[in-house]
Length: 188
Image (cartoon, rainbow, N blue to C red; front, side):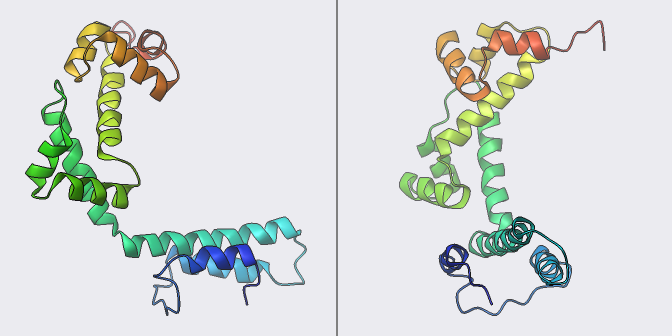
């Protein structure tokens, strides 16, 4: 039924979809996308080829999303992300090592790093930096602390490394971000 070589190749890459019979509820996104695809593949409907391909790709994306969910259940990913976020925020003013995270999680450093990357698609260090920068951005939106103080309380070793990391993540300096986003106490 599916005759698009590119899509067949994509679907074949998922071991949870190869030669599988999926049992899905009728309201699942995969079933809904399949119904939309079937409804819009009717030759009597006047659709251009791009609209038909759009429905086909939506169905394939839902299948891939489902396969990824089977491979890495959502709750496992959320539990791991929650654990790292909680640990990071508990010691935000200092650099949290991957070894310390792994030890508290009960696995080796390499096992933790591998598992984290496999489940989330990013390294633990990148996620920790993301959390620290999100917290820094939150602090910059409020009055009170200087940029140097925010850098220190979010675990950066000075304003310069903080500024570089912040620019990479937000495409602007911490000072510019504050100028744009700071909540003025008078207006609140």
